[in-house]
Image 1 (cartoon, rainbow, N blue to C red):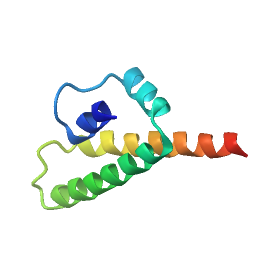
Image 2: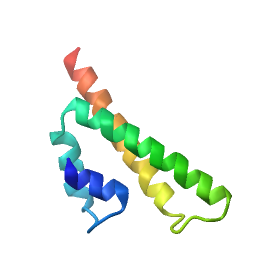
Image 3: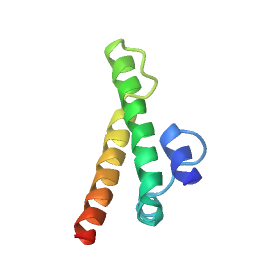
Image 4: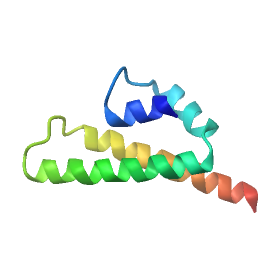
Length: 83
């Protein structure tokens, strides 16, 4: 989980896409919900900075949006499997 938080926060070495998927699949549902909350707060901050033209890396918005989609997909597949 710490590796995903580092990836989301932009700190450290980026995680490869296949590693990112594996980490999401192996995480517990509570960890995913916590990560989702963190990512959504970051995307709000990035969008605000982009509007004010203060964003250091505008492409980061795209990366974070994809992370949100991956987390939502994993949570949805777990809910479907439980039913």
